[in-house]
Image 1 (spheres, rainbow, N blue to C red):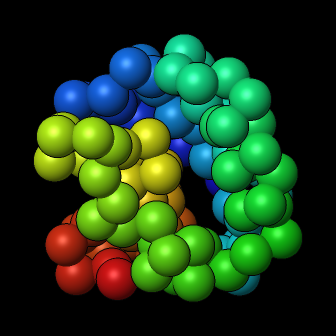
Image 2 (image 1 turned 180 degrees about the vertical axis):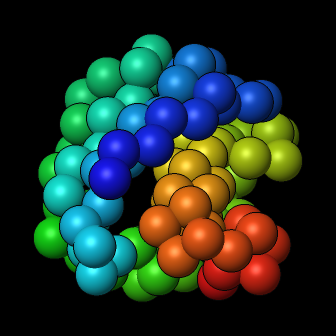
Length: 93
C-alpha cells in the first residue's frame, strides 16, 4: 500500500511511503528538503520493518525545530501502518 502525508515544520513538503502487507518498507520518497541526505535516508530505510524505522527516526530534531525530515518520515510510517492494520495511528505503534 502507498500512503502520502503532508509534512509540517520542515523544509520538505511531502512524504510518500510504500509498505508491503507485512509492514516492510518497499519505498520512501520525500519531496523537497536536503536532496542528497534524504535520498540516502530513503535508500537505507528500504527493506526495513516500518516499526524498526519508526523507532530509529521518531523524535529526531533538525536544529532548533521540534521535528525533522526523518521524524516526518516516522509519522508517515505510523499513519501508513495504522491504515494497513486498520487501527488509529496513535494505537498502531
